[in-house]
Amino acid sequence: MKKRIAVLGATGSIGKSSLDVIERESEKFSVVLLSAHSSRSQLEQLKKQWPSAVCVLTGESSQTLLDAIKDLQPDIIINGISGSAGLEPSFAAIEAGSNLALANKETIVMAGKLILSLAKEKNVKIIPVDSEHSAIFHLIEAHNAPEEIILTASGGPFRKLSLKEMEKVTAQDALSHPTWKMGQKITIDSASMANKGLEIIEACYFFNMPAEKIKVVIHPQSIVHSMIRLSNGAFYAQLSKPDMRHPIHDALHWPQAARNNLDILNFDSLTLEFEKPCLEKFPMLGLAWKAAEKGGLYTCAYNAANEEAVAAFLQQKIRFTDIPVITCSVLEKNWSLHYSDKETILKADSDARLEAVKIIKKMA
Ligand code: NDP
Ligand code: MG
Image 1 (cartoon, helix red, strand yellow):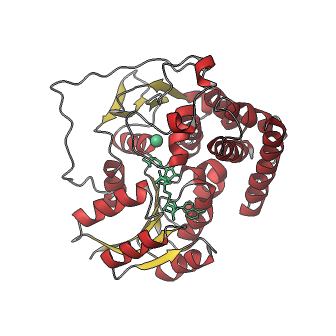
Image 2 (tube, rainbow, N blue to C red):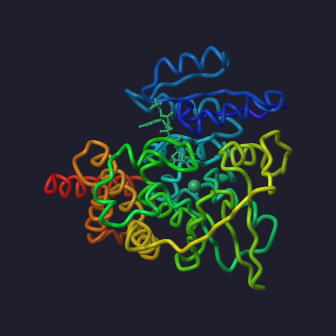
């Protein structure tokens, strides 16, 4: 029987890669639900290509999408929505008993403990799609529990700039990523390394590891997707071309390790470099470790403050280097309340945004 798949954020970078994977294996998968936010004409095009899929535009209200998830109960829901808007659909997926192929890292950063315990309770599997976490997930399945996780990071377009030069970069500079082609928000986050910050937090929750056991190494070629270190000192790594269709394919086939027909990595002329990230140039890393250590609602506040700061940077209200300044100020407030419900998380998200907007207004 074909697996019934929903692709949320179908018009985005993850959404398009997901549909490509599904199209290549249409004998194994059928598309039952597609969503977009405001790209109406693109969604209409997709409806022609996938006529049996329910297509939902969430621009005016996201309730129709939540209802469709509940009604259709797909076997797997790929959540490729960008930002905190991905949280509610992730909850809806788990409530519907659908396995969740999760690209939307914000779900875990905002609500890690709650969403993972709910998934356990509902006997639903969350399979990471973020390339690093997908690599670690599969490495842990193949080996023992790790002593340490090593997340690789491309270092983004500003790896070689000085802090002074980074003050002057434009949105266009920040939007040209050297190795990955992705949506706007995650591309800016890659340039500030907030993306790696979010991934440190994501790894803590996903793999139940303390923040100090999650390391980051710059690897400009984006071939090694992450590594684990076992107690005997051995490191295990996962390598492939930087192509999100790999982790999407693996998530759709889990628990099987199925063959794919994507390009294979060629070692004939391959250089792999590794270097230490500069914490002074990329303060979003240090802030993420701190937020992860503190737990509670700090990780939710980190995400909210960064989202507001990135939006302000794209609107040319602040400098690129103000993004960590704003996030740091927001994190100085008290976010230590421990949560056990979604409403508390949404309230903290909104409070942190208000705080960030106040700071942005003072800067502008
Ligand atoms: P894109 O910006 O390319 O796509 C975002 C998708 O989400 C679009 O379909 C968009 O619809 C939809 N969307 C935007 N805002 C909302 C909203 N408020 N409510 C509902 N849907 C919305 O993003 P990416 O594909 O790059 O990233 C998606 C997620 O995956 C992010 O969480 C990102 O961190 C994560 N991720 C992405 C990777 C990548 O390679 N791109 C790698 C690893 C993780 P519309 O077109 O109508 O605006
Ligand atoms: Mg990633």
